[in-house]
Length: 320
Image 1 (cartoon, rainbow, N blue to C red):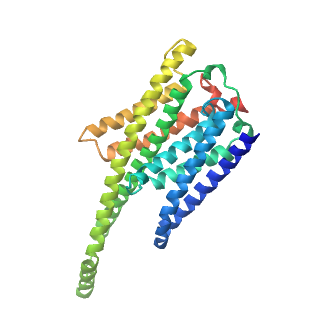
Image 2: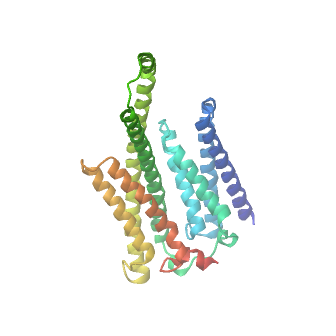
Image 3: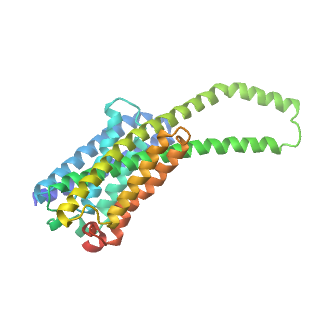
């Protein structure tokens, strides 16, 4: 009873704190005067991390196993991994370009796990025979950690695409306006435009420099996070194959979860191939990673909606 109460308290504290962090992020984006609250949001994510850590440890103690055995527990674990990724640039004293991705990701995953699922799914249960193995920790923790890193890296690639195409659309629009002008501007208007151009030259160049730096940082951090996520995903698939051989007598059964995990791995293998090809890197690799974002959610969450296959113990259907 004590552990259940403690888990309930930690769940609500962590969700309340990350909700406040989201509000602070929106304020700093909309109003420049609130930039001083940035450090408070980082401390809030640190508090969320400790609360989620306490929640997982508490559930581990009274359930007797690492809490990653069903959809609810894996979502809480996913939120915990998001909070860890969020804090890496903070402790390295780098500018945290990940905060606008990891903080909302933590909020939505924990929010859905806490309020979106049925109450019965939040209760700890005895492990099904297929999960009563030492491979549970190795396989599931690697898979969920890989999903978290790949989701963050994919969102950074999507942000890179948005910034790049927004700039391209703006340039194309300006060119179209110049082509549509059928009469020469008069001398007064020309002098005024020339004065405005000289006045805003520094502002425009600094803004372009900031955009260039942002794109470079998104590409840099996105590649590093996707590399870690791909490594975790590979280890998770290999350990899952060994576990499947012990439990079901076959390394690979083309279960829906296994199939989509292989598709996910293939998509990001293509991403790294495009990174090594000088003719395909840049926007092409970012497009592949953005497609991978949708594939991950199908693999992690969408397959659970089917409630079929050897991984059906993590579905909605079985619980309800």
